[in-house]
Image (cartoon, rainbow over all chains, first blue to last red; front, side, top):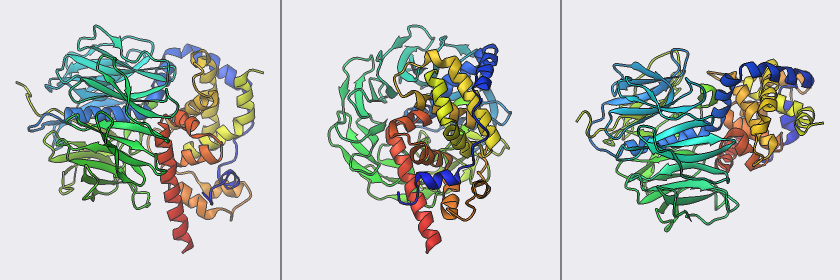
Amino acid sequence: MTDVDRASLERILPSAPGSPDWDDVMSRSRVHQSRRRRRLVALAAAALVVVVGTASAFGTVRDLLSAGPSTKIAFVTDRDGKLALYVMNADGSGQRMLARGSAPAWSPDGRKIAFRSDRDSNGEIYVMDADGSGQARLTRHPASDGDPVWSPDGRRIFFVRFRHGNSDTWVMNADGSGRQNLMRTTERDGSSILSPDGRKIVFVSKRDGNPEIYAMNGDGTGVRRLTWSAGSNGDPVWSPDGRKIAFRSDRDGSPGVYVMKADGSGQRKVTSNAVWSFGWSPDGRTIAVVRDRDGDLNFDLYVMNADGSAERRLARGIEVTTVGPYGQFVKFPFVSPVWSPDGRRIAFVSNRDGNFEVYVMNADGSGQRRLTRTPGDEAAPVWSPGRNRGS
Amino acid sequence: MDELEALYRSRFDVFARVAASVTGDSERARDAVQEAFATVVRKRRSFRGDGPLEAWVWRIVLNAARSDVRRIIPPVDYEESAAANGHPEQDAELRVALSRLPERQRTAVFLRYYADLDYVAIGEALGISTGTVAATLNSAHTALRSRLQEVRT
């Protein structure tokens, strides 16, 4: 970059505020001891920024597999001053708080919601009935747990345990028993993504040098490498039928979205240029991409066929939020657009009207509507499963 | 001197100034750096050493800075800060272009070209994958280039 060098950045940055004071650091550190528990919560959550974004986005994609009418949207908000899970009808009516927490994941039958909360100490996985009753804690560990995802049969919950800068994927029964680490590696592995049928997991690891995508069975066995290229490969997302994987790679020098078969064959680039996030439509025919194609600093939502053809812009000014460490809203377009289970609508978050609110539109981009209207910020909308609801 | 204290003393300015680009305020940036290092001192034993120490510290510093900015990240007054640095006229275009970048892109630019971190360390510091670092910097480049061309034509 010709115009950005150290000297010009040095001139531009605000000047340093005072001089270093190590004694002050040590004294603050002793004060911390008395606040240890509270601080641990925030710190342990520090690793969550991106992983929450991608994994929850995946969770929503998985939840979208069941067809049928969708009735509810769960979302995260700080409208009451604290981070909380809310639910509303798809038209924005009936908004109410279910629990303090974040990272909501609907069970496949729509009757329960697993979520993350740090109410008892650090981040742990909880579960509740879809009306907010019967809240129960499932994990109990000094490390921070997050990103719950249900197995398709609703009997198990996968989650991510963040520890010492590393993240491992664990699985447990839906009642919290039988917890098991699926990764057991000391390498720095990235977030793990469960296949739609619950039988495979893809993850990103630097175990062979540069970031590559690997797959393994749902029980942690049979690890195999899917990508073999220079550059970095990451952010894998399963197609709804589990036969393809979309991922990000900069193997040819510019970051783009690629698609491959689940066994790693047939890798091809479908789009490039400043892509921030992407996701599959429920029918697997379309890929949505949030990116700044025009370089105008506005992130727009595009959809295209899964082979990259017929690209069109659906919405402007998308800036999808996720929930970061300390529970603040991180205003980065990380999270993939969220299709309703029937594929007819897309929920997204935008600050086009000031602060962050949840919007829905038809899948062709028409009929954009704002659903929330609060002084707080809203984020991470998740549709309830459409099938078998209440049956 | 302990490695951590050495890092603090040698890089205080760099930490504080990049943190100020997040908080928009030098004093709050200083507070964030002090709090972050206090945290690091206490958490030191839990650092496993599987990545660069500095990258781990960056992450905690940036998170502390961001935690101070719970809602809308206030725009840094680059005009004022540059004037304070004695270069009121210089880099005006770049200042404006940078101020219009999303926070993550801007921070990535500062970490790469001011703090001299490599992609892996930036990934650690921002809590994102190396691929996302590449994409982030690519987007920042594109946006800056476009903005700079715009003001020059």
